Length: 179
Image 1 (cartoon, rainbow, N blue to C red):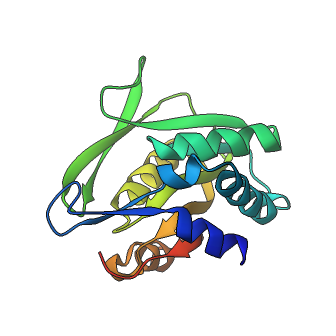
Image 2 (cartoon, rainbow, N blue to C red; image 1 turned 180 degrees about the vertical axis):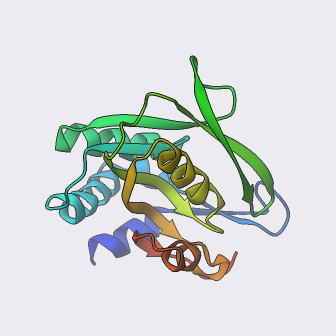
Image 3 (cartoon, helix red, strand yellow; image 1 turned 120 degrees about the horizontal axis):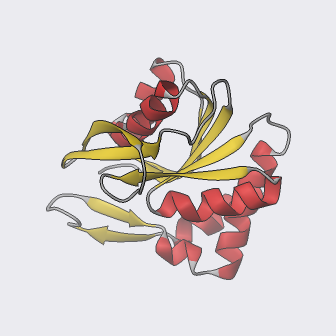
């Protein structure tokens, strides 16, 4: 069995969470499995070992886990993008749409320097709202997103297509059809 197949079988599906009709793809079951976590990290390392980037941005909250591991591995800084009200100090904000509502992301105003090349990591890509929110924050600080990476893509929700249509590079490990 391939690493990707191993990863996919370790991701738990929880029906009707956080709302009726949503099939939540829970990566915590993947992350708690030592081999699953190692395979996931190895696939991302293989992808990014020759890519030029300066910092890793992880989106709250599961993006923090992989983002921190990759930042450590590549000897890069790690920058958290957080939900509204979670960061101390001066921040910039960006509201975005979710598949089941709206929310706001924040980033410290001094987190990214002008021209820095940024690798963005999260656990899952659905409609692309969170991804676009994070990218807009980085671009407000004049950073350049080199790629947006996730473990799980939900292609039926078109997030990857929307990001690519807007000119962004996207890397995903596994896909799940349906919502």
